[in-house]
Amino acid sequence: MTAAAATRAYPTVWRRPPLIERTWLRWAITGGAVLYLVLSVGSLEINWARLSEGLERGWRFLIAFAQPDFVSRWDDILDGMIESLTMTVTSTAIGIALSIPIGVGAARNLAPLPVYLACRAFIAVSRSFQEVIIAILFVAMVGFGPLAGFLTLTLSTMGFLAKLLAEDIEDIDPGQAEAIRATGGTWLQLVNYGVQPQVMPRLIGLSMYRFDINFRESAVVGIVGAGGIGATLNTALDRYEFDSAAAILVIIIVIVMACEYTSSVVRRHIK
Amino acid sequence: MPVIRTAEDGFDWRLRTPRAVLLRWVGWFALVALTVSCWQLMTADTIWSFVTDAPTQGADIVDRMMPPRWDYMAKLWWPLWDTINIATLGTLAAVIMGVPVAFLAARNTTPSVTLVRPVALLIIVSSRSINSLIWALLLVSILGPGVLAGIVAIALRSIGFIGKLLYEAIEEIDVTQVEAVTASGAGPTQVMDYAIVPQIMPAFAGITVFRWDINIRESAVVGLVGAGGLGLQLEASLNTLAWPQVSLILLVILATVLLSEWLSAKVRHAII
Image (cartoon, rainbow over all chains, first blue to last red; front, side, top):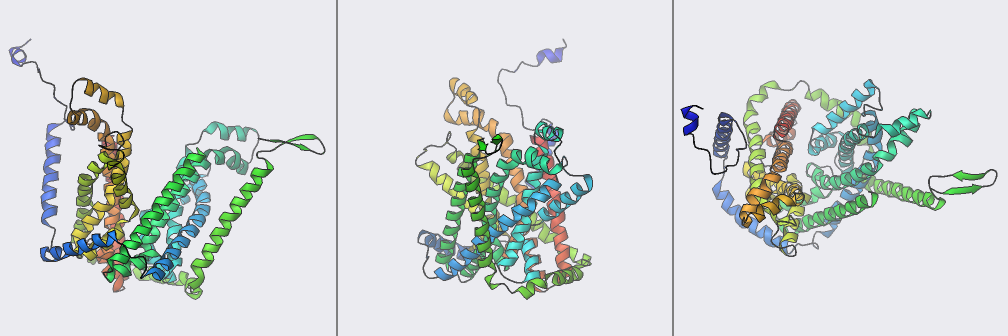
C-alpha cells in the first residue's frame, strides 16, 4: 500500500453517483445547455407593450371561460360540430378499412419483400408530415370543405394504424401461424385463423384511440379551410368573441373526454 | 363454442351461437349505416366537379413546386432557429409546469385524492384535448403574433402529455423502496428525493425527449396561425402562391423532423 492511498480517507458520508459519470461530458452538456438557453432566450423578440395589453385580454378570456356563450352562435357551432363528427366517423371507418391491407403488407412475416418495401414506404411518407400540412395540399386540390379534411384524416389514419398493425403482426406468437400452415391452410386462411385472432383486441383498441385522435385533429384542419369546428373557432377568435370560443372549447373537451371514457370501457371489455 | 345438431349426420361444430352471429351482423350493419349516413351528411355541399378535377390540380401543384427555390434558404435559417426554440423552450416550460401536476395527479403522491386529484386530472385532460395549433390560435389572439405565443402554446399542450405519462409512471413505482426509505426515518421530502424520483427518472427523461420530438413537428406548423417559426414563412408563401418556396419549406420541415426523430431515438437509447 502506498502512502498516497493510505492518506486518502475512507469516505464516511454516502454520496449519490452523478447522472453522467464522465466529468468533462457532464460539464460540456451543462455548459452547452446554459449557452443555448442564453442564446435562445436572448433571441426572443418580445413586444412588452403588446403583451401587457394582451394580459388584459387573457383575463377577459378566462372570465369568458367561466361563462361560455353557447346560444348566440349556436347555429354556426352546430354546423361545425356536425362537420367535425361526420368527418371523424367516415375517415376513421374508411381509414381503418384501408389500413388493414397495408398493415398486412408491411409485416415481414406475411408479405414478400417487394410488397413489404412498398407498404413501408407508403407508411413512412404518410407519417412524415403534420395533418395540417397535408390538409393544405388537399384543400388546394379538392377545394374548401369537409371533404379535404376527410381525405387528410383518412391518409393519416392509414399511416398510423398500418404501422402499429404491422408491428403487432410481426410480434405474434409464430406457433399458432405454424399450426395453421401445418394443416395445409392457404395464405388467406393463415391470416384469418392464425393472425387475425391474435391482433384483433389490439386493433380494436387502436381504432378507438384513432377515433379520438381524428376528432381532435378534425378541430384543427378547419383552420386551413378543410371544414369542421376549427373554422368556427377561428372565426370566433378573429372577432374576439371569447365567450363563443370558450363554448366551442368546452364542447371539444367534453367530447374528447367522452371518447376516452368509452374507449377505456371498450378496451377493458375486450381484454 | 356451441355444437349444433344438424339433420343428416348428427353434430356440427360452430364458432359462435346463432344469436351471437345475428348480433354481430346487426352491429356491423349499424356501423356501416352510420358511416354511410355520415358520408351523405358530410358531402351534401361538396362540389364534385372540383373533386373530379383533383388529379389535374394535384399534378399542376407538383409541377409548380418543382424545382424548389434553393436560394430562398437564406431567409429560412432564422425561422428554423425560432422553430427549434419554440419546441425546446416550450418543452422546458411544460416540464416545469407538468411535473408538479403529475405529482398532484398520482394516487400515491397526491395530497388529497378527493380534492386535489380531480383538479389535476382536469388540467391534464383539458390540455390534452386541445391541439397545439388551437392553443396557438388562442394565444396569438391574446398575446399577439410572435414566437412567445408559439412557446406558450406548445407548453400548454405538452403539460397534459407529460403530466399523464408521468403520473402513470409514478403510480407504477415499486412501493418497497418507498417503505425502506421511510423505515430509515426519512421525512416526506427525503422519501420523494431518494425513493420516488430515482425510480421515475428514466421514464421522465424518455417522456421529455419524446415530447420534444413531437414538439419539433408541431412548432413547424404553429406559425400558420401567426405563432412564429417556419409555419409563418409557409403561410406567407402559400398566400402569395409561391409554390417553389412552399416545396423548399416542406423539405426543410421534413429534414428537421427526421433529424429530431433520429436525435431523440439516440438520446432515449442512451438513457434507458
